[in-house]
Length: 297
Image (tube, rainbow, N blue to C red; front, side, top):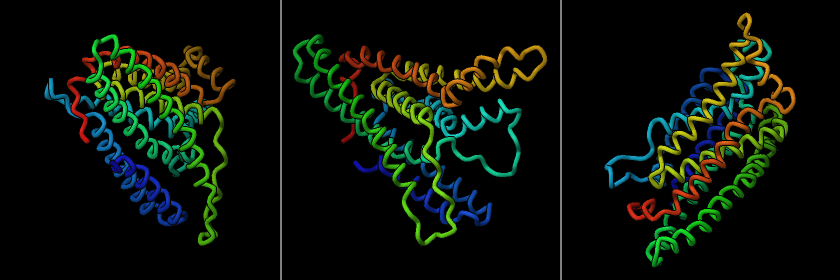
């Protein structure tokens, strides 16, 4: 199944067009950006739907709007949250008339490319779990056989993240001899930003695993907690400007001063992701999480 590759291809194509149109008319670049973003988001949602089929037992789909909105917020914060937090801490944001650039230049392409291994890993785990369910003679035997499969699935996806990070990094450094006026390649992102991206990837993957096997409520709660943590950081910094409320922003200011703005999403996603994975280790070891599944081929 090659459909999960489409978000990455569309994102790469949009990025190439934006590079070609660098210095061109602003409205044209904005139209290309908006069209590309909508196409990438739509194809990603369709690809995720392939991994999260409708629940036959209850007649509904597990990918709820709340789950999608939370995923969009977390991805949007990964792209522009560090920039916005720095602007707020500096008294801004400053309205310069230019659209802000992503906090990590290659993060959009990395996220789009990560859709494919995420969907493939979830579908592969579902097929493997169903085979083990059919071959197991007891619930205890099934649980003992499916937990190593789950651990392997998580490890495989986690290992794909640094590979994609290096691939996108190499792509941003490709020479463009036909574009002498092209802007310089962005510098290597901070290590903290790379950790934040990895934490986000694991969090979204854990939520996808749970949603694909009937634990959408746990996935929604986990993503909502991470969203509230990131939004809370922005709100406390903003509220700290009011008279007498300066103390509200000091924890975030101290965190950013010591670890950088990427520490906020790193903590928000990095704390929730292991909790969701631990829950998946319990919930997905139950036969009831698999025997009603109908994963399309």
